[in-house]
Image 1 (cartoon, rainbow, N blue to C red):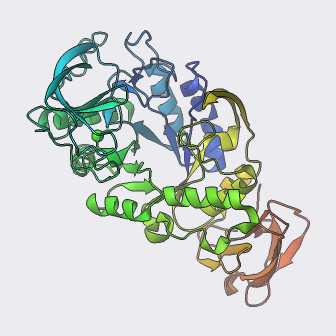
Image 2 (image 1 turned 60 degrees about the vertical axis):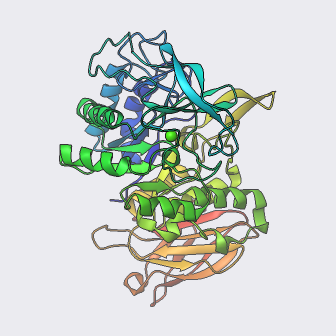
Image 3 (image 1 turned 45 degrees about the vertical axis):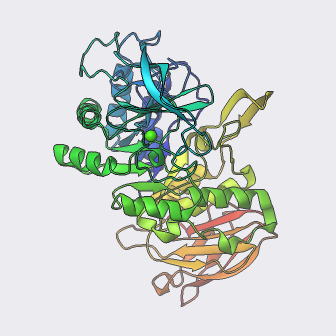
Length: 492
Ligand code: CA
């Protein structure tokens, strides 16, 4: 069975507390389509209460259970609804990936006098003040939870940095000794600090607390893996300690995907090496290739679409995606793949042998929302990608076997899958163009000689019969994608 992840949220999902229930209701539909794993948004209490998607972490142990930040539930619902949602997904034989944010915390309960030194925002290795004291919200006592599950109190010894407005300060405690942590990312000299109170991993008590939390989280929720937020800002050696600890504790594997947000393939490969290949990574370079191709139209050379991508360099570790909650319109990292190219991009992540694809919620369900950007108000309407359901179904049922590539023309590329004996009726052919369309001879292997294919995305009455070598002449309309499957064996 091909693995297919579904990202069940977007940044502007309504804050009505209904996401867990909605996901429970949709679990059957997603399982029927062929989705195998559902990536749920951060489930614990945000400093922003119900008004923030969950990346402004306040209390990792509050999954919508305690009256904190003026609310019991989170943006997405209550703890009971979350656990019900996970059960509904498990009942359909799908896995759950939890989105966890371990780089920072926000919304501290009390201020402390914190010894600090200000650093240059553009070069965090450069101190631009002497030792001084800053009143900062670094004390997290979680009064609403009152010690349940863990009595760990976070204070300024648990953090390496704080900010005040635009100013960034390194905390001077016995763990930092005035130095940032060893993170992979060298942008700004050292990119340990991202936001809020930056978690200090050289403090052994912090590591022990996060191990305790990881065990509690898996015991409580039964999740099957993690999407690890902002890994490029977290001490390199933390996850290689934390993940084996959890896998050993539960005697099971966990699917772990790191978000290393950078289009540079060498940065991703460096992180993979440094973490021993135990963390899969989102293929950010591929996303940007899709983005550029969608903007350039027929000016983009499709032969280069996989150049300098993770799915090409390390396919076994690549999580491929078209868009996500950070790239969607009006977000600060906006790089939205143009709608005309989405079927192309989804075909390239769903129907090829390499990579594990992650499908974004609005592509299946659409989305509508308003926000301001650069002081201007925008209303966004995202329609579903009409071809997506068919592509997911074909991935689940037919995209198996050897892959023959025809990435040989700037304006029209294709590939075939020859099918596999244990997947009756499997095999497919894909042809896509960003230009005037056309034809291409492609081969599906002698095992398929004489078989008939029909176009699952276009005029299904048009049939192609493979010759004795398994060759067929496939065609695609201008600017479109054709996906051909064996006749009578496509139950869509
Ligand atoms: Ca950090």
